[in-house]
Image 1: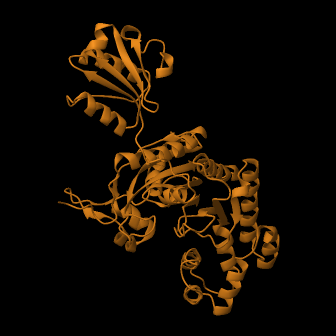
Image 2 (image 1 turned 45 degrees about the vertical axis):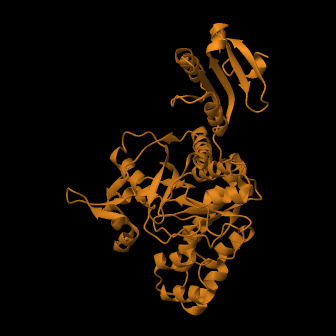
Image 3 (image 1 turned 180 degrees about the vertical axis):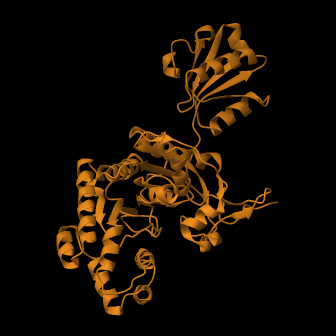
Length: 436
């Protein structure tokens, strides 16, 4: 007997039906905004991640040498891959490029709440637009996706920030600051204690008093951003604040401003983020980690050898991640049950007719099962009940002698007969009521 590996999960049909509904809803929402499907490889060159994040990233990868002697890794995220794809066909692609992809990813990391070593994300990205409307559209897709899943403004909150505000504030201090290290520390602010937080900021180059002052500036609310600009005296902060305010104004026009809260302590740990960033959180705090996040990464395409190309996107985890935890907490997780429109039950030598009826019903878009195990009448009825068949069509030898079949409603238990030659007839989804 073999057990599944730590950090990997088996998902059986009933649970998968709920996941499928979530994935379909997320993808359908993005497609309504014009995002187009792509598919991407499970393996990439390990060097692509090392070049982007440093040698230490290898410890978090499923990386190995393949049979051709190449160092490869199972993809831990999609952003580098789509950047590579844009570079490969940059001159041929119409801008803006709007892509969506749902697929598994792998990270060798500590398993915890909502975090597995294999997980599924839907990646939603816009390439080729630096306009604040692109950032706002990403926020709008994310908000519509969550409300389509049944969540309300009381359930989630988008904490919105701007990376250039953080770096601009850090640059305004008379100190030699390691910007990346300081911003990574801000990203960990809620996960470490205060003493450790200040210590890490001082390790990044700030004095203790500067670290305290910097953190106080990060508490600025949306109504005091102009004061922050004056206090910092930084042109970088001024430009970032103007951009952030433009994004929030566009979010108002897109109808999703109510979901957005200014949070300058939201930093996003990945170094490639360049502008507006955001993270989605459970408003109640029951799901303690960010549900998902995203933001702008304008330099990544150029860093992969392409022409300068602005980009913005986000990636909700749709399986083995925190979005399902939020939906479960809010009581809107889809029912974990199978759904079947019809079971065509055959008794005796009626397979040709039963097969014809099943084909006709499937041709009209219905989910139809029929016997493939030569089971008894009772066993077939039991199976039809186990798969939640709404209607059972009984094709029996005695009924066929009268040119009839029996239509049984599985909820009420009522049944009636229908002419075999005209079933399903003009009905795309015939039920007991159509023939009673």
